[in-house]
Amino acid sequence: DIQMTQSPSSLSASVGDSVTITCRASQNIYEYLNWYQQRPGKAPELLIYTASSLRSGVPSRFSGGGSGTDFTLTINRLHPEDFASYFCQQSFSPPPTFGGGTRVE
Amino acid sequence: QVQLVQSRSELKRPGASVKVSCQTSGYSFNTHAIEWVRQAPGQGLEWMGWINTNTGNPTYAPGFAGRFVFSLDTSVSTAYLQINNLKTDDTAVYFCARNIVLQPIGGATWLDPWGQGSLVIVSS
Image (cartoon, rainbow over all chains, first blue to last red; front, side):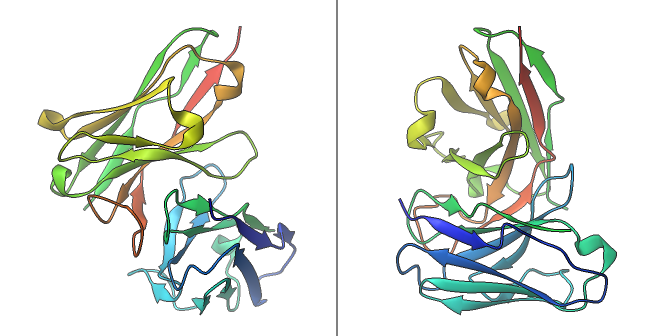
């Protein structure tokens, strides 16, 4: 199975800050990488698919990048509702595997 | 709009069974796979497997073959997760989610949307 490693596992930030979360795959997954946001007590929601495509309705302050094994999720100018957990997921090869998550607090 | 609505929380004894439902609406049920994801308390997301909503054929992640059963009722556009012989380690929130494709065997696939989650507590 492909292992997905996210860093950091948590980070502290303030409203208005910009933050970057990284996700590393144990092998080349091309651009088959998705990002999900999970607010406390809620279900995950898709933010970005295929590494850099923004889901319709997701604010443009979210952006994704990378290919191969190294990927990033950047949030520019944090809003209060962005304080949540973020998970990456590879879809290149079954089983689809998730990163351990990053809590933005 | 596309919606997945799951059944409410359940409290069960070890050894019992539970059946979680995932009722879908807003799209053609048999054109997208349904996947199941587990989240233990305070933990990350664990992929359990998926079911082809056209054929009913399930695929289970290695740790979920045996006691976990995926099924469908296409007449009401609903997917089910049954867990048999419950153990305390099964305590978790179980999410269903729609995959954008019917047969997610790799490549450009993702989960959107997700159900709200069903908490299953296993305790004596």
